[in-house]
Length: 512
Image (cartoon, rainbow, N blue to C red):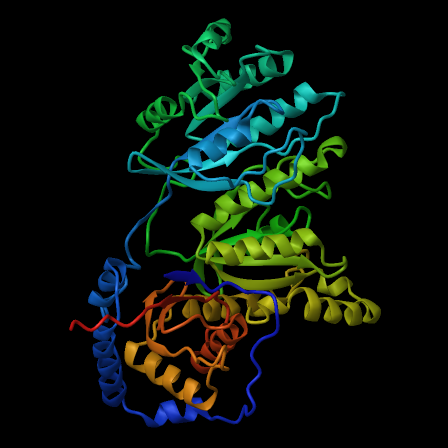
């Protein structure tokens, strides 16, 4: 049984005695002794029930991680259509699980905009273009513009129409845009619940996308045939993300909410006006990759932002800014999250930070517009950092001014720190010695008269560091956070998220 150890609610385990000097004790233990201890613990796992995934992991202990292999970004399937035609229901049907929020009311806000899916052995990303608010004024233009952003990053498009209603003026607006994109489009006639209703879908031939695929997203009718056609048209990798080659300049994503200063910072580092800068939030529409020399090194920066913001479509702008940020993070190794100190930290700032953590990228916090901050704002900012950014206290912080370039060179050591931590590997011997010393000094609290033990630990991969603990029982969330914090303190994982998972295993039954 595996469980991802993500931050949980509740307080962290507080040891009775913090003066354990574990780092000093580890320094006194030779690598040979540490390896011998890990070998003995590994042999002890033979007494426990292990599954094939465990065996695969343990068989490759000590192997080098394949960090230098090129990374392939899976192709993207965009679901496009007007409100209430069943897009989110179709997304859930494709995923085979209920993840996209489904309601009869159009405009349900979603934080998560893309999902990983698989069909017939092919992996791909599904983008749900839902979350539009109903606006009687100009809804045709709004739907077409928002759908256009999704179409720009898609490799194949599913255009969903309600077969019971037929093509509307809004559908026609989207059709005109899709024809300009010259991308594969499959026309989905949704809400065809039985064979008698298939005749209704025949009227959709007139939209010019060929055969309508009759589907009932709610009941699953026709979904398998549709997905077979989808995977036959999907390319090997995303045209938007492509194949990311390893080696060469390190890749940095500049992320943050609109108008926080991303483009200004990129221009200042590049030494020229590479990107259009305007006070209107969302001026940048497409991600712009730039090779920038900073600190006598060449870096590849990606400037990201959402679509043009208009007064009547602010939510849609934020929605697609989030989508493009997610796409940029997939191409990056480290994210520089810009936060404007002259404004209160917003929910959107925290959401972008969480998106960066979830992406597994290294993280640097850049507090922009520092030259505009007065003493009163400084006091409030420190309070906001303590409350709203406590979960990323491990990230390096740099105070800068994107407009003037003040302290831009301080980004370089922060980037090096984060990337070194992101790449870091801990030997199995050192890790198990650390765990042994930690548990001996601070044992897990008794629960129901039992005390779960950590049998063995290993680092499964880096970029970001991922650790697997074999245990005899579930570890309390607070104790898990304590282990993660001590891993950071002992081995210096500053600037990178750490993923720790546990596998609870039971002893084998002795044969009589």
